[in-house]
Length: 406
Ligand code: PLP
Image 1 (cartoon, rainbow, N blue to C red):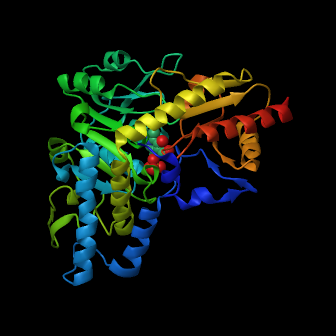
Image 2 (cartoon, rainbow, N blue to C red):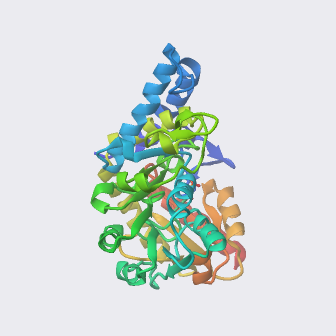
Image 3 (cartoon, rainbow, N blue to C red):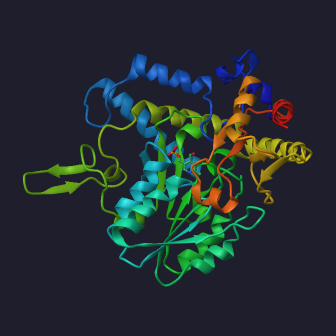
């Protein structure tokens, strides 16, 4: 049984007040709060178990290495990956996607080759491809979303042509909450010999993810949204794609030997992990993912489905609000604007006075904002510890904003 009140007790920050009101934290899409077990793991590592990893032959280095490397197996299990060498650690999705762009795409894509993106991508899954457009003449093909915010997999498949080399799409929109049928897209791409990158930054937080079943080449996750430390993350890279890749960053750990006139590289995943990594962050991420799997990813998804349904129903009762995107199966992420001239920033400031934390702005999704003809929205994004009564507090605070601005 999913006991949300007990779960809330695991997150010390949820007990605090903001502006004299109990905190209602609805900015999980930007970053999630951390359970005590993660905070404890970080503290304990620094206090008792810290040293650099891999290179040392002393007790603490071996201990830190064991704990750090244990996270690789945990991430693999979390993502449904059998071979943990296909998991490359990094600082988050931005680094993961840049690694694919620099290590896989840049050396092989020629002028005129195509990259297919949906218009609801986060800038982390746009700007690295713009670099290739600007620097190498690669063409970006954009696939629109339907008016309800859904992404028709067939539209993505139709955009794949003889020059398409990679399709890079989000599994879940950070603005609309739309969940994309990435498995169908990956199947079609595989049949055509096209590589696939899935941005799992949002999806992996809210639902069980099985990379094997999805059948993609690359799947990126980011630790700070997964209740883990900021600066932690990982990307699944299929073995045969790793073999096609040149390392992007050079430095310690990613090499076998370095001499004056020659260098040889370590085997993956180390080949793609140059320099001293986020040791403590990655240990904390392992604890966070164990925590989530302990609650059960299906149980978390079920809890959030209930919240999403309730929030959708309450928000649809506010006819002075425009909610963006109502695709079926959408997750618990709601972007909205208010009738009249009230700017999203002003609304979020009023909500903040009531202790309600939401995000306002373009949400790093410029092409989607252009498509919606909006400069900014307010976004309430729910996590595993949110409750229906917090939806009620959000609505009350929004009513206050409406009264002030109308
Ligand atoms: N992709 C999506 C869909 C996101 O929501 C985010 C973060 O907001 C990112 C990528 C970038 O993640 P990070 O900033 O952790 O690298």
